[in-house]
Image 1 (spheres, rainbow, N blue to C red):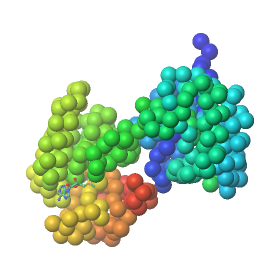
Image 2: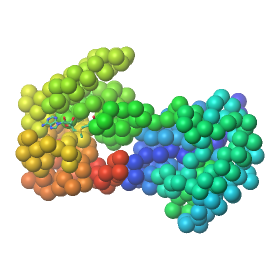
Image 3: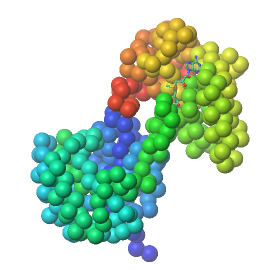
Image 4: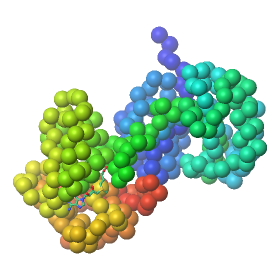
Length: 347
Ligand SMILES: C[S@@+](CC[C@H](N)C(=O)[O-])C[C@H]1O[C@@H](n2cnc3c(N)ncnc32)[C@H](O)[C@@H]1O
């Protein structure tokens, strides 16, 4: 059987973790043909049903209709013109076949930007002619993006909105599931894991950890309502792995009830700047939590910590340096907020 033709795709992730993302993609999908890695996206070639397209840590995946090198300061107008001429030769009619309405979007470095009305209108008319589909901004089923990158790339992208990010309708305060999946993957999940998220909130990390096997999984939050909601969410999920999950209210900073050396992996995002201070300053909370983490983690146990950039984690860690060792840190943007992702292990 001849192998299916490779197509070009573009998948997005939070800005700042591109080196980590490349390493993970290469390890999980060794057949992947990565063409370029941007600050918050990866361009690659794959078959139309390649599992890489559904990697849990990608925010959005687009089919690349065309991409070309361009001037880093290219205007959306000239990029749109360049793509319009080639549109008739793209499989746009086939791609839009099952969609009722499409809309055209413009972006620079992954962020949507406005485009002059005339540029948008002309692009929409060209696509309408090529596809026979009507355009509509509200309730569109599909999007065509003219995307410019400061690295000197212009891309014409297509995506269906039904397949859009899992994070689109999450409760306020919940970590995007794609980021939860990335954090869990970064912890090198093992079927032998006794896993803990001591600040689990709505479960953006905990629920994603269920993708990989584990021995036991614990989630703690001091907010009873969040704990009940997470229990309900878990109960609605099928599958055998959720059976060994324990969700309860408690103080994630003290971790009472856990024996020393019992936990093999902690993945968590404790309160950031929005912390209400009821247990002291955010630094006091982190210091108490990290001291407890050093106690409950088994030797070589992993700790993945996502913290606001203004929390001085390295300083807080200094007195614990004989028990918790920092392996790596990555500055990143999470919903536009400055954050740092830390990987530590129990010495
Ligand atoms: C940044 S949020 C975590 C969000 C979570 N990853 C999610 O996806 O929803 C921090 C959480 O820590 C909880 N929290 C604050 N102080 C706590 C403490 N001392 N012990 C346990 N949980 C605490 C808050 O209720 C909040 O849900």
